[in-house]
Image 1 (tube, chains in turn green, brown, red, purple):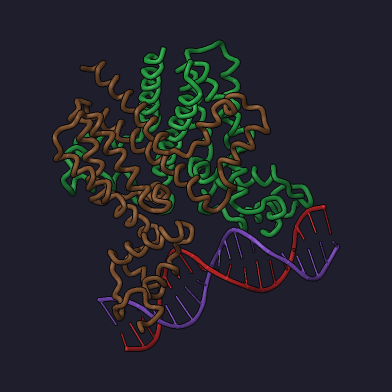
Image 2 (cartoon, chains in turn brown, blue, cyan, green):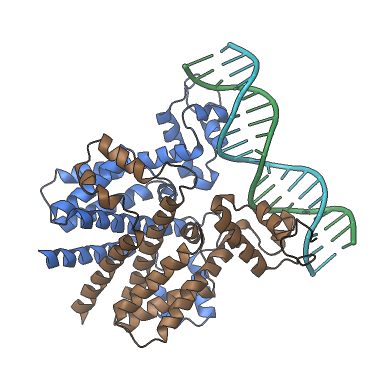
Length: 227
Length: 227
DNA sequence: ACCTGAACACCGTTCAAGT
DNA sequence: ACCTGAACACCGTTCAAGT
């Protein structure tokens, strides 16, 4: 028999940043961000809570490392696309925006984790550099490229935040769509009533693609007017 | 002398939802969302923490009421604009988006508060109905209007979340721009290096206007192609 | 060098008991 | 009816002491 309380089969289970971040992300997926406490994480690692502070100065520091790790997926997708036969620039930008959303969706509360930290690690910077590069190579000047980077990433995090919030009722609200439906039919909101089917649709990919299309279309217009 | 520990000069200071939400928003502005605890709020109200639960089932319930109150400002601005000599539709939509950002900026951590709740009260619905109405009256069909509503609000919350996060270093990071600058110059991120001046600009209004312009321009193109 | 044990100063929430 | 007091089951973080 292996000792029942040991999370890995090895003996003393030395701590390090990589293993800690990995376990933390697994715990995040299981229980969500609100349930991710230093004590529970320490438990999963077979260690006392205080031991975590030898590798992370603070819980915020750990969360930042988790967000940075999460963005590795987006950065990898970005790098892979870079070596691909040069697409139309707007397809490349769209691909990167989708990669960011996918990376955030890959972990429960991923968007909230990302929005709540300020990762400036290699993965985050690699992704941002790649997206900015796609814009500059498309002919946007440095200022426009930087602003477009922000517009795209802020829309993506805003959207995904909402998507994941309605996905996992988390710590609150009823069935979500029911709440809105009920409130709208109770009060007098003619425009919300008319658009209710779309407003309560759970096809988030289509919602995301529409907003992304708007941004890309706007970029297209801006680019033409300066070329 | 008035008793030094009484927050208002009155005597027993009966509790109600309105006064509680008001005091909570004042406390939010003073100390930020992380420091807004039920105990501290109770203290400011001259009451025990447990008493709050007679008016709010849970802390999340209180936060939702705060967010809903916050959106009153945006809804009022929306209503005022509705009776104004009919602007160009894109100016009206832009006005509403700006009103939302302004409402979120009106309180410390306002965007985080709004993003972390799911207010479906009269203020929130009034604002959303108004924005959806502006889009429908511009000629967008119900589906497009609903999707555009989401694109605009998600961009606005995403942007303002970031804006307020870098405004108040909150619970973490150094001077913010310094972190990015340092990381970029240390590693090899040519596109971020080239765009660094804009990336580290703290003129958030211009950043916001650029993203908003992109969305409106995209909407303009979409509208023309169906008209 | 790395972790444990124990403590400090808090949390949100519940609920009998008082008034 | 509304609030207090006190408790329950937690938190993040620190730090002497052990190994």
